[in-house]
Length: 114
Image 1 (cartoon, rainbow, N blue to C red):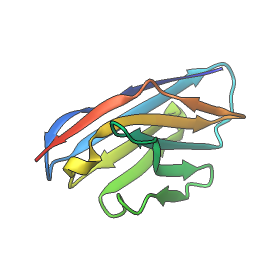
Image 2: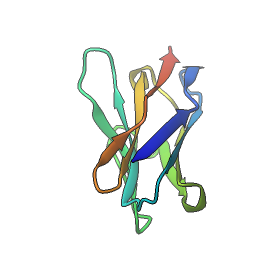
Image 3: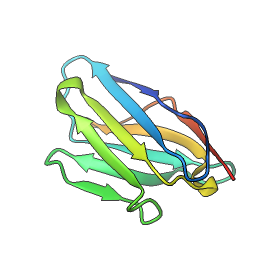
Image 4: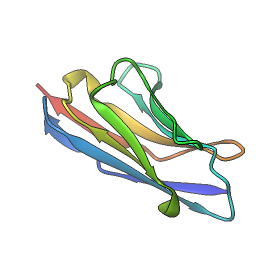
């Protein structure tokens, strides 16, 4: 079983930055990939960014060039640096870890005001 704890959400003005963090813990587990998804009010959850075991990264087109995903393997943690934030980035952001199955964090609210 894997537990995920997220932090770093908040309220920011358009053009600002936020950094999300997610730490994974639990009994012995092997992480195949870590990533971030988001869900805006009235919309389905959507993919944001992902980093896999090899270190390769993937991004949704809507965040390319603005968001950067990174990880600290020793801390079993993944981060999302979000720059040039836009009001349309407002959503609950969820950490996702793949370790035999998908695990999800509790979500952290990101609100970008115009």
